[in-house]
Length: 258
Image 1 (cartoon, rainbow, N blue to C red):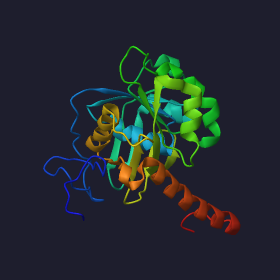
Image 2: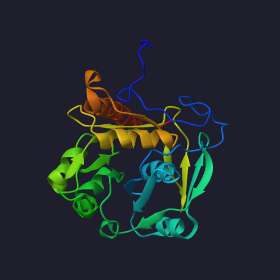
Image 3: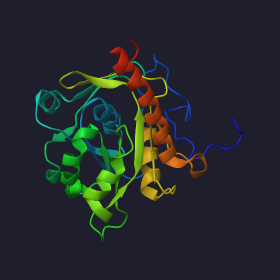
Image 4: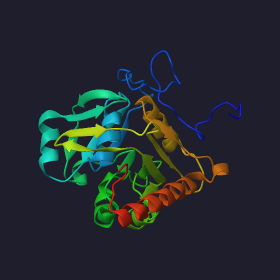
């Protein structure tokens, strides 16, 4: 520890009643969310392991109005019928009633978009997100946060969405998947987190508000500081690690942990 007072740029950790900066243990009950002052409208694009888990955590906070945009199928139908269930050793098991649609045009403008599709789908999905953006006269642009592996997502989104979107850099650390239709299993890691930020290193109000919202939902959130290389450096570190594991996995035909 450096002894310095923690800043938002360093880390925003989950909060719970009676302990603002304490991590949840595996046996802890789900936290009682502490909502921010204003309701933030959030669209989560993709309801698989990444989108389903982080979107589900945000959806149970009073400070978020979350809509999932997901393709039709058994998973979509199960969420509509029974709600989204999260099964997590760290955060407990809970079912959250959420809105899920197939078309972004039925959602309207939102404050933030979490893009949680696979990279091979991004080029087709990106142009469909324009109905989610605030107009030029509506103040701060919609924050668009790609939580994909790799380095190219921000550029693809910027090319498709233009100046009306504030496209951030982003990544996540999570092991989560669709266990069965309507159910997301979360198995770690112990440092499950979401990281995002301006690639220029700034911290506009909407970035700070989103980070605080994740923290109120019980999710560790980091906005990497400029002196640490910012979000771009964090994205490169994750990509290098994935490249190393992927090469070994391909050569040995083994999965992670095998």
